[in-house]
Amino acid sequence: MRGYYPVDEVRAAESELFGRVAAGVPMQRAAYGLANVVAGELRERTGGVAGRSVTLLVGSGDNGGDALWAGAMLRRRGVAVSAVLLSPERAHALGLAALRRAGGRIREDLGSPDLVVDGIVGISGHGSLRPRAAELVAAVDVPIISVDLPSGVDPDTGAVDGPAVRADVTVAFGAYKPVHALAAPWCGRIELVPIGLRLPEAELAALEPGSIGAQWPVPGPYDDKYTQGVTGICAGSATYPGAAVLCTGAAVAATSGMVRYAGTGAAEVLANFPEVIAAETISSTGRVQAWVAGPGAGTDDFARERLSEILATDLPVVLDADALTLVAADPTLIAGRAAPTVLTPHAGEFARLTGADPGPDRVASVRDLAEKWQVTVLLKGRATLIAAPGRPTLINEAGGSWAATAGAGDVLSGVIGALLAAGRDPSWAAAAAARVHALAANLAAYAESASGPGAPISASPLLQHIRPAIQTLRSYGIG
Image (cartoon, one colour):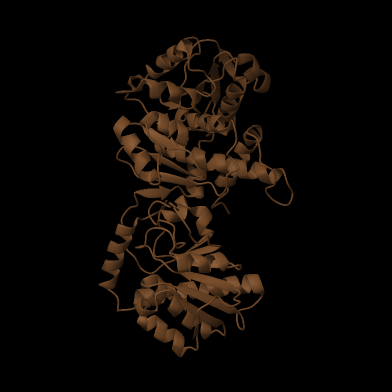
């Protein structure tokens, strides 16, 4: 898994590193890696390195020092390097001296660079850019490479509450920080430069694509339709029959051995997926190994009775949409439930469940709900978070917002249900489903345009791209 480490853990690891290597070595490693990334970007964007121009925006502290040392290294490669010192009296002395010795210039304005390096604020900084820095950043009309994180973005929460840098590339030193996943649109492409940190197991992590593909349930030589997982779907209503189709179709596409449907949308479901076994009631559905309940199912007394019947079983259950509304109104529906229970709220549903928006610290909020209710919680977003009591929090950065469309959540819940029915761990199932869901949305967006993602997609094409997304993940590491 890829770990994301908060500032206090990174600082502790840096302190340990400083005690076992010579003074200045960590900064030299960071600066060398930064200089290489900048040189690579110059080569890619302009066709060369020597003779190109770079302006450094330099704040106080180590990030400014990293930028200054990298500037000195770039000067030795023939790059014209200038530095704007935002706090001249607090600039990193050794880095500034190195830049001057290499022939770098100090200036008051941006000049006309090919690239700008953002070394304004490091991981110890919080809050938005100060006026002078904000003015300079607003005037930049060339690509920006940020040192460790985009200045003005909170390193631990990814929150942006004012002027901030929107980087094209962010060069992370030693470890990924939460900002790199929680605020990915502000970071651009992220390059990690190892500097020798020794880090504990991360409490915030992302599943690697190859591991998802390797662990995705596929039929073995002795499997049959029952051993591959039987998923029960209770979704849809006369008002929202499409939710039944999307949720059930997702469970089919996610390689369930069998999908059983219970609800009033049987005609629509069977018209699209004749392999599904449909029933009108929960009791007549037949044996299943996990349930998905809620998408488009309504919130009336009848819907509540069906949900209560499902929650009374000892089976894993995924609760989405209307089921979350019912649980928010009466949390006793899941109180004390021993079987795995996965809640999949978006921000509005999260507020109904807890009485408050997730706020800027989404990681803390989702952990708090999971711990208080003793359930697994998947909080939707471009950076989807999955928390379970006593477990590391998992994160899936979608790489875009193509899945931000009506009905996409119904598809996601169906995929999670299929994985639970196959016996997968709830946290893993939710995170793996989120990855496949995001990849399917990206594939669907590309399919709409030969030149790349074009117009926004609807939820229906997601179903057609779930299996290609699974196969893409399974292909990682093969060959």
